[in-house]
Length: 464
Image (cartoon, rainbow, N blue to C red; front, side, top):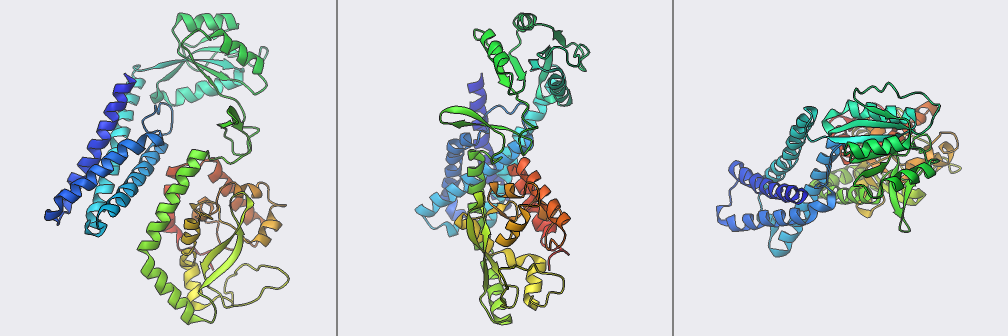
């Protein structure tokens, strides 16, 4: 059954790619003589979709997982597919014969179809599950508090199709769970009664909501069901220990390990983020090349000095790199290794520089930093090394901003925390937003930050 569902999903994806091209051709298609070339382009994309989509886990079960994240995964996968198809077609012929407008329509329509059919399918399944169909019964073992928390989460999202049917309080003497919030939930007093209930009612999901200290009990429960077809999932309570209020399981030396204080992004997430960064930065540089040249000329003609301002900043894991900006100040020398932030009506800022800083156009050369791998499109903004030395000892969690690559824009910036940090409270709020971003990262959140930056984050009263 699962194989059939996977095959149907792949066929629907191919259909979405072809249908998107067909609709785009109805909207915009001038090269009638190049129909064969366009058809080959579409077939290349369909083939790459079949080959690459599985690597993004979009054919796995998303029951109980974020549909926003699914949409982001599909969008990222489609972006990679189109990039690969473009490169392939470029190696075969001149890609400039492709109508850019047609390609944009096709990419947008196909992405909409790829995401839409999935969201519609999940909406239909969610409706069926709320009606009592396609349910997964769940038995939960753990302390009274942890069991109650998970039951509340299950109740809050009935569309996932999980239903709590049995609870086992593994910490006798704690708050009673004899009156669970969900009706029809059986509370077991012993592990034997708990195991008997699971077998008698054909429960296929067992969730162990225990602390890391309950190793012995976890082992007993796993051993108890070693001969049963029960999915056993360990949901450890590590939120009080982990920096980012989350945990992730990785493989380390061939064995599973749980991150408590580490980079909140998995290796696969980092790969996808970096892949998007490189493609996006290359597209921005190509599209904005005339603007970059115009700004460079304006900076050169407005005052004496180089076009680019270079400064050392810290990147991922504290590695130092050189950041690029369009120079917005007159050439001057800082004394005693002190770096002074720009202030309102700063006499060092040129007239052209004031406009560039106010509109954030001075940051555009940082897309070359992204191409070099020093920065990301979205991430915590890097500060001068002198400011890092100052703030990491007085602002809690400051150093953890460098667990991922710094970004051109970020969650703090679109929420108004940019520009001068003349008070410690401003830096504390900026760091708090950066840590929130680290703890809640998703491809969808990056897209939201980029969109907010384009539409309302470029011009800021705090940038001077």
